[in-house]
Image (cartoon, rainbow over all chains, first blue to last red):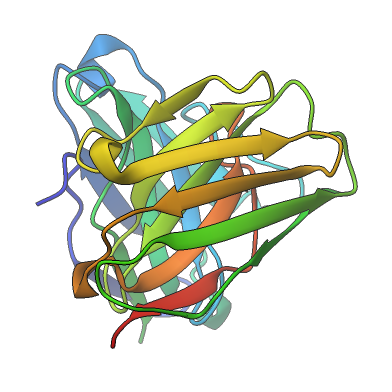
Length: 111
Length: 115
């Protein structure tokens, strides 16, 4: 069981908006630690999608946005495209575990 | 553009030691933290540990007793050793640069623990 909780799957039709939640606790998000998001396309290494809550690396479309509030974070994708079909992971630091932790991952299916 | 490449045996026998090396190119290895992360087939990501270029380390508490990391800045490489492996250690192992987020990743290498 992951320290950060994500829904196992979400889905949406092309053009729609989907959100992926990531629920933490007082020892990670609640303690002020940042959230980072990764996209993992099938058969490839994860790729950094967002860092420090809502900063987008160059090359990441602005259809993707991130936010964090209290002990939760979320990733939103607007204008859903077939190429967005992937696994998405949130990540932070946990002071109780004294290490970096990931969410269990969310599989996004584009219908 | 930073590039990273994992190398090492793809098959390790139970109770033996898993050894992997990550080679960094395209940028300096200095003044960064470098991590190892693994992913069993069909499962999520698990952070194993990280090393700074000074040699300072932090390990996942669940693996700490079996993990050792080292760095060779002259070769732009850092390494992972995981002792007493079992089938549960079978996974794709990634190396990644870790200034906070994991901003650059290697392509990953599959390590299977089997006799």
